[in-house]
Length: 125
Image (tube, rainbow, N blue to C red; front, top):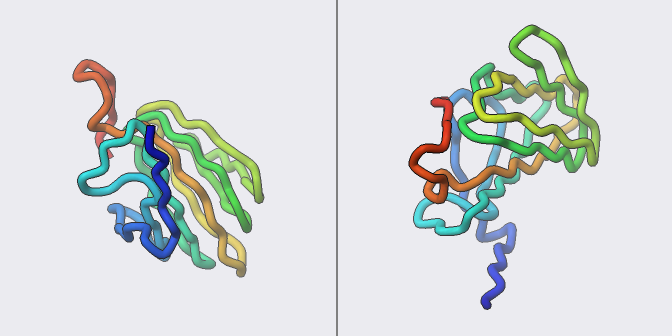
């Protein structure tokens, strides 16, 4: 059974819609990826944000460094600091923003849509 290693220097850059001042890379994911789970590392500059939109599938956030503010559909805010995590079920609207003067980094972990059963619910983002 092989072990897949992705050095950060070889991670694939991408730009998701609705993200501003965010530099994400796929550690596991992207084009031609066949694993069951995707992992992205997102770097948020000061003022960087992801616009309010529903997550397409169940999503886990793990803040690695800095502080990020997660806002829910009702306007409630949740401040996540280093090593704090959040779980969002499929379709949960959220926005993410770095409201500090320091950069912040977060892992985003999701099932790979290519591996979901055809009848699994998915929101469109």
